[in-house]
Amino acid sequence: MLLKTVCYYKKYFYIRYRLIKIKSNQTIMKKLLVIVAVLAISASSFAQVKFGVKAGTNIASITGDDGEGLDSRTSFVFGGFAKFELSEKFAFQPELLYSMQGAAGSESYEGVNVDVTMKTDYLNIPLMAKYYVTEGFSLQAGPQVGFLLSAKFKMEANGQEEEEDIKDQMKGVDFGLNFGAGYELDFGLGFDVRYNLGLTNVADYDEADGKNGVFQITASYAF
Image 1 (cartoon, rainbow, N blue to C red):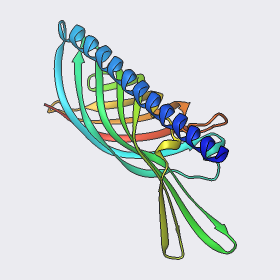
Image 2: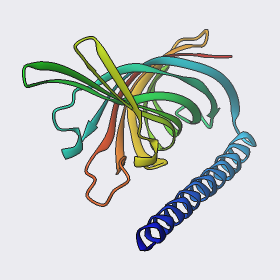
Image 3: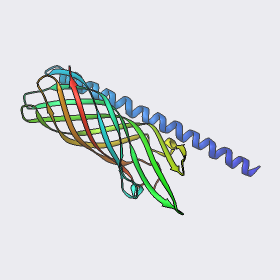
């Protein structure tokens, strides 16, 4: 009877914890969207606005002790943006990106080669400030918040594979800092090279030591 009661309360508090975490993530997202909307409205009142789409390649990794032994995972990123041209030298560019991140690795265990892949998909919102050094060429920097959409851990060995959903073990919100450079052509085509430096641990436990690190190359088109 005691064991049954303990199990009940463990399950009860875990469900409460998950609900509080989900509610907290939703609150953060709502506040962020309000901030982005206010910034966008303020910028649009005295700036020329261009909208566009972008897509490219992520070379993602996990830094810190939790990423030890893991290599980078090459995947994709795509989404849209709005560019507010504040002057000839400055622009503000919020983006909404679906970003496939994580890490991958391989090791031998008792003579068996095991390939592992951690696949984490985020909805990222970078808020980029762009300074144009010369016409078309810009230096970029800005904060980013990401909302975890899915997280899976995959193992492959001897032609067999197993995949586990680990989203419950990961933090739902990820904060980072982006910096990089870009070049835009007159007819709307552009190219960006960017690095996202993760500022928060991605795993949801006290001793976690692993942050996202993503090198990103994208092509864009502004309408």
